[in-house]
Length: 207
Figure 1 (cartoon, rainbow, N blue to C red):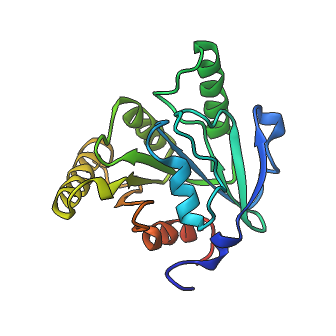
Figure 2 (figure 1 turned 180 degrees about the vertical axis):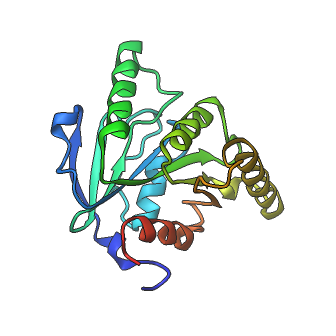
């Protein structure tokens, strides 16, 4: 398998769901992608798959209000989860999103890992840390995607990467039994794709 797995370029939209009863069959392998509403999550999905417009991007944060599923191959899926922490939507809508995501995490047997998208200029904010704490309690493997790395100098981005890895290790991986990996990523410069593919390949059983 090449560094850039061609399977992702064949990704197709499956469906959007607003309740657990609408979820696709809980079979095979699934990876969820989540992050703050302004962290560049949709752009990251489009860059990872190489398909412009697969995940809808918007200048208005919080556009994703349901779980959107994309099929990569037979029984291999990406789940695009609603963004959190910024969207200007009614509190009742936010509470509905939270309930949907919590139920999804707790019941989905095919979920193999979680990619948390963070703006590299503002990593590890309170809601990110809350989600990481849940993942640790559930022994859910996590990959942190530090997006918009093009906004920093090469040295600045490298320093952020080292700082995030150090903080995550001290806060969430003290016992060494929680899988949390971290990388830099830029949708604009198309950097970090191979590393993201390597992580996904493992969780989706491509290697």
